[in-house]
Image (cartoon, rainbow, N blue to C red; front, side, top):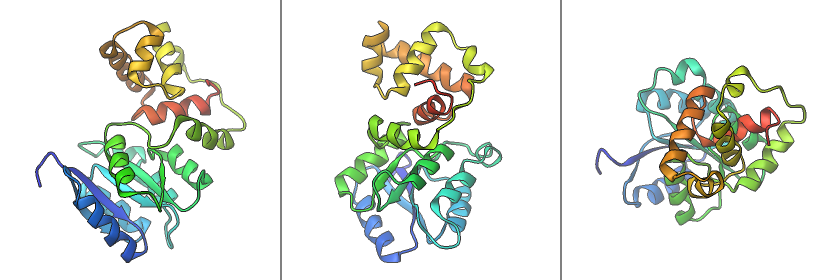
Length: 221
């Protein structure tokens, strides 16, 4: 256990499931579970208290479900008090769950099926910790297309992006990696990273997943 470990909070109303996931996560090099919650209300409190790097959030729980808990966790006034970002992975038993899509709109970084393998769980935690989504771009697009039947016009902040930033924005929204974007816009990967950082800052977005959500919300894909 080191200060560099990815810290994880487990949220599920079934104690047996939580303890099984705890064993899997704690067995991974560079990861450790720092807490567990049985419902969304407790999850929101523990996120504030423990400031984990990643939250594994069950989508269906009594009292407060994972959708509402995600909304509260990423509420601007609560997020502003954090010293580091938190990422949420939604756990669901249904593929392409509309509730999961709503949680992603609120700020979650994707979802996993609850019968996923330990290897996929480990990789998902590392992926979202790096600011990326944990489901394929086409699956994310399918989920979000259901959510956004009527798009709203892009805000002024988007219109303030440079031409090159808009190129990079579109490529990120399509789910391309930095290496793929570099080949598309004829720039180095480091330059692409700089553009992505500028886009996130100008649009007040948290990560690449939110760029995809923003693009769907405003009909930019």
